[in-house]
Amino acid sequence: MILKVENLSKRFGGLSAVRSVSLAVQQGSLVSLIGPNGAGKTTLFALLSGFLRPDSGTIQFEGRDITGWEAHRVCRLGLVRTFQVVQPFAGRTVLENIAVGAHLRCRDRKEALARAEAVAVQVGMAGLLHRPAEGLPIAMRKRLELARALATRPRLLLLDEVMAGLNPTEIEEIIPVVRRIRADGVTILLIEHVMLAVMRLSEHTWVLNNGEIIAQGTPAQVATDPDVVEAYLGRGAADRLLGHAPPHRSAKEAENA
Image (cartoon, rainbow, N blue to C red; front, side, top):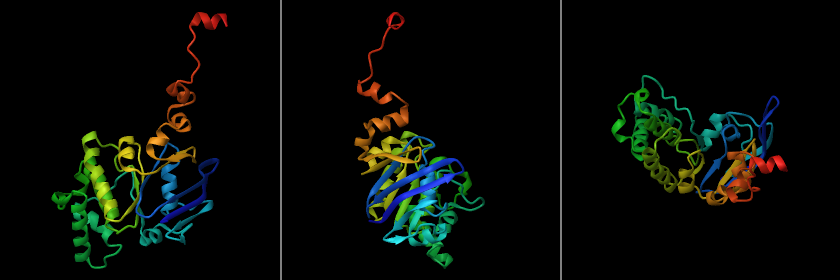
């Protein structure tokens, strides 16, 4: 077990963003966390990666309790996250941006640049090394964010909507990139709204709604879970989709009822 989370909670004033969340990620797996907007997914990632401190609960990484650790210590252990909003370092090339991540492990600039170049090849950016990072289109910015995280040599990678904003062709192109990262020995937990990617990539998924885990299982299993359907589509949606809703009455029938 590479990651074990037990009863993790976080409040912001009167809002319970994460409520008693427990989950466990197996070494070498590729799993996912889904849920509607505002469900608490990114807050959970921030807790796991040290950008927020939990109010209660525990986080264990490779058997070590890292609850409340600062982000740089968590990253150095090998638990690394990406960010949904990509912000390249302005005035720097793609290669230099990736090298920022590599410097976590590489003290020497030459070594960091060599590591950055290797990672660029891994994510399909070898031809863009000397391009200004701020001028990249969204699909390449997403790959740059992924590359910067990979350059730190993570053991567990938290991907926060790496496919958000991509068109269908770009999604098809990045799916094999994610698969190769996992094949190279990196465990992956991803947040994703693109259900095509979740269905194609994920072995197991947890569904978060209003800060709580409401379902888990294979993507195919949770896609038909009534609680999940309700969370995404609203009250009564599960009955309507599964054919359990009461028959629609005409206006005259309703008037005579």
